[in-house]
Length: 531
Image (cartoon, rainbow, N blue to C red; front, side, top):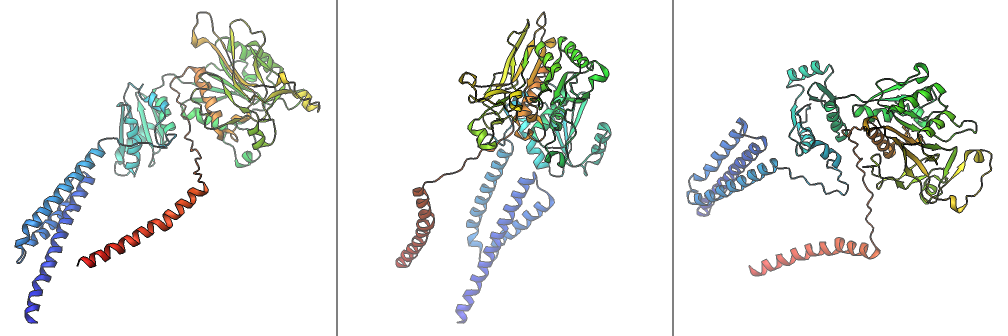
């Protein structure tokens, strides 16, 4: 008894020493990993490593000297594994190994952004303030892949108080975590969102040499440019705040113009927008706009079908006719399958044809349909004025036709003849090239047969935003305006047949658990028989 007991004590002590030594190796391993992640050894990591080394050396105590070789080999293996992990970490952190495997590239920069970044030639300073630098760092890293002109600095607004105060004074604004300050030369811009569209168009704004000003004509019942209230949205009150917002996000100034008061188009106007007037313009305004257009002006018209037979906008129609665009007092009827399924009425045409034009470039119409509620036709005049070119831009489905508003209001609706059925033009562009071919003085007009698709209620469909922005881009010849398509998550349901469902149910519920249970039981029985 005593002899056996005497022998058991050293074994118990030796076992304890072994576990102490293993704990020491573990502490050294943890110290190395922490140092690799944080970028260097600090006092706490050095202390942990030193304690671990002392614990490891405990194997040299009495009774363990014979196992030193084994522990040394174990220690060297751990050093090798730790070194390999540190090397792999350094490789990953110094190389962009991200891969976006989503079908619509949900987590990648758009081709428009990449193309623009490659055109940057001058340095741009970007200073971000945040308490979570990793997120902001990841956001900017994807841009640095395509340009080395972005000088990005990420700071803590509380730790770097002096720099924060300097930028507050320089930009004459307040500062909060998440703010990003951008400067190129003498131009500067502050943004707050880590959003591709907002950031790229802020770069556009600080690089632009000339201001672009879009004037919305007012005084004829047009929708407000102010942000709508919940009550206005509920009542479907037409407002165009979203158009103003997307312009301002891209550094485009937005103003209102009451031409009836001044009698002339403002001198700094780059583009005029007539969005959903409820009344006709006055002859004075018509002449002022016509004179401005003849000198190379640019106009976007959004004109709804008349709600009354006597409201036929003669001045607007004559203005458009002067530049080759025919506006009829009619309504497009389109009893296509999708419109009838969604709205149960044929007065919401479905756009199925987009003309090849800069305005329709980069529009994701393949991802989402464009329905136009209550629209009139917009066509080229039968006899175009000299030098005028008119191109239909959007067309409805092959099942559509147009009906006179007068006939509809008087309940004299008649079925169309077969020759009248076909795609109807809902929008058109007109251009007049001046003598000498100077594109900067070219007259450009875009006319839409509906304004409802551009209101804040319907702008959620996104495509109208792109139509408007691309129209402004084409009219002003601003190649730097970046219209980034929305990231659309496609619905991709997984459909299984009855046989596939039965197979998965049996395989997951019966087969795999059976293999685990009987495999483990068989292995245990074999081990016992071998013993």
